[in-house]
Amino acid sequence: MSDQEIQLTPTRPYLARGIYEWICDNQLTPYLLVDATQPNTDVPLQFVKDGQIVLNTAPHAVHQLNMSNDAITFSARFGGVSKHIYVPFAALIGIYAKENGQGLFFDPTEYDGVQAPKPEEKQAEEPVAEVKKRPSLKIVE
Image (cartoon, rainbow, N blue to C red):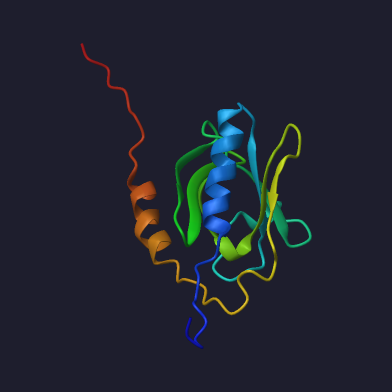
């Protein structure tokens, strides 16, 4: 081994994907506990309490869920209004099942010294969600 330390990628994205799959496979409801004060985090601020928010990410509650190695993105309705959510993995405190609290909470220092990715993906996805047309009906005589 050389004197240089090998720079490993954080484990949080990989563990979160695994726990999410385990929760869904057991027909439980996956909840994300998010630090809403972290840079680039985009969540509905009216639901943030003490700097944190809990998000229901059950497959029936979200649309276009994506867990990349940088962030979790999806669309969901809050108070009847659709909102695009962007949670960098540095902001993810934990993922757990609503029904029994089982899951995983992460080491808060894991992302110390890791440069936060810019939410380029978020900007590219938002216009797609806004282009969605509402269904309409016509009277045909």
